[in-house]
Image (tube, rainbow, N blue to C red):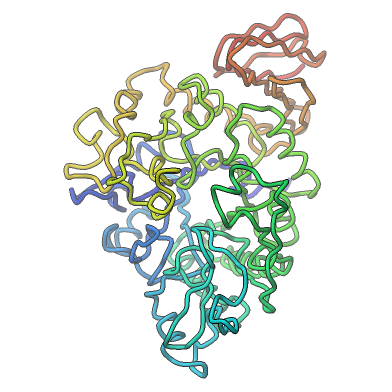
Length: 538
């Protein structure tokens, strides 16, 4: 019998370190803070911890602009602190994964300084994506930055533009340059040798660009939605600055580099990617044979309506890629909190937790989601720290609403820090702290622990396949199966009662936990508002 790798069906707990727990009273979270809360993380029943970027950074984009890949940001502690955290996690049976940002660096990274200042004939001249200006001095082509405006910045020292898909302080590393590519791969080697169990790769679809710098085509005006107009870069299809088919063999190189460390006594490693565009990328770029082990896209992260069709279509799309194993996430540091995005408060929070933990894939659970936290919408213009919020205010407050400090107690600053936090503790989170919920056997935290326990105790929910059932709205239903075991998972995605009938339900055993009210009458499941039920089929 072949044993599935540890990550297949695992629950990975995503820690945004700066906002998790402040151990030394300086206002921002740190690695010793994660260590101090490791017992809490273990109590959830998760399998791994994914740390947001912990490397030195000027923090133009809060760690996603790295200036030293082999260091630890002083705000977070030292390399010794990270090693202590990894050792303590491993002692508890928890894996530790790092968030690696290898598609671009900070403009304060020594590699970029060498590329900028060494001239066109310098050793690292082509380690970044440089291009001559157009005849009139404007940008080389029409590529747009995700954060607004042209994706090019003019550099007088070279009399050229350099490409940046995000902030101008985040120059694009040229993965087509063999030495630059090898330097980036050695970053993975360095941390794997330190005992790290794997990586989440930031913007994994952007490693390669079109060498000819071909213009991106426009999204036809008739197809543009409010989202396209709100984010100007979405008004073009990113076919030439990212999402190239050549990414597949390159991502396979990364995966093989990670897999090469599997025989060092530390167990199997895991590398998954973030793909911001179409879900087809996710399926095509991560197969059992090629590309990364797994990935996620923003399809479910951007969803805002409790529509069964969205989830069915997602799996129908991924089903076109045999053997693909997805990562599933409903919230992270870039996305508004689930409870607020879908509306409905605690009932919807539990419904979506039940759904998240029963869908096929590796679950990515963002800190605070297990508490049912809402978005921090009370942040003022002066309190915003996110460059996206700075750019898009007042249309958007950016991503800080999901990055506010984790609420540990009902004390000042919600137990996160004894000092003024880097972002205010959200008043919306009062009464929802880990401590207050830990003492309540019917809290959302208790429900989260029970759901994770059910998942881990039921192979069909962990590593089983999925069969989506076509149902009219508002019911979402599917069967997870492995061997002879079949688990029906049924969700009422509305605030009104609903009925789901299927002859396979007859004689089914209702499992716990569950949320909302429901009764099984023969082969008909009567569901109250926002109810979820799991049935072991006869």
